[in-house]
Image (cartoon, rainbow, N blue to C red; front, side):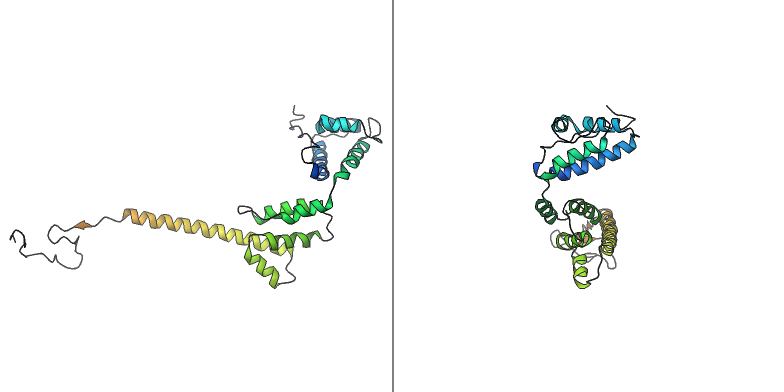
Length: 226
């Protein structure tokens, strides 16, 4: 049931993706803290109760087996206990592998790809996140123009790359729209072009434009009629 007009949080399912439990839990608890702010949840006992309720029955059962969970008013202790439980599932090698496998999809904008990479990089513990994201866009992005510019200019920053990528996408969309309109105009012109008639005298296209009919004042070879 919605609380204060807010939709309930999705349940956290520890077994949904065992290879990525830690990252999923981190994302879920961040959303839950935002949910608490939106619902004006300040009382620590209520926050703790909401945490266990919104996380779902599986998490609640796990929580009951954990040490150092604090008393019923200690929200931070509850979060720390659950995080410590899910943290061993964290696998930096796997998270980095998932990041390296990410490629820009055909209908994915550079901003969407950048956001997805930043979300994946969050759990990789990179020393230089900006550089790693830039390199992933260079290697697995769809724009060959950005790739060439990055190879040519060693100081080409991620910020500049995103700006150029947006400009390129905007120009491509505008050009595509213009080409579609031009095709529509050409199609309309073809459809409106009157079909040529056939001259019943000479058999050629009619009208004859700037010359008289070649059969005018001539006798028909078949019937002999002028």
